[in-house]
Length: 84
Image (cartoon, rainbow, N blue to C red; front, side):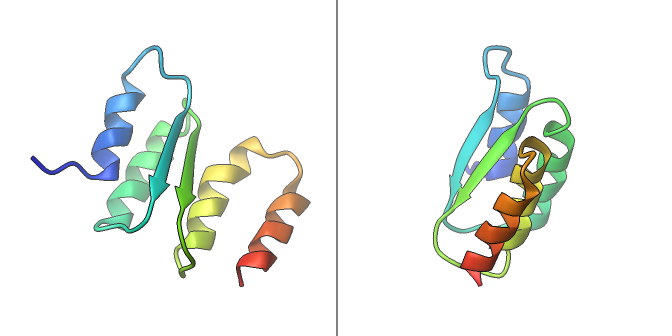
């Protein structure tokens, strides 16, 4: 059986004791699937995705997962600048 990140996030979306979802991502087979599920689930349960390495999708992932919960947007800008 193969599980992708969108399967894991969907499982924890319905897990009552889980108050936040944290995943560590090294690579993605289906980034569009992950973003679609994360966009839906993050409306009622926070998701933090930690991405190993550097890549073109890293900024997008960070902005999507961190922005709703961080009031200090300058932190995101500084973090984003360090990733370039």
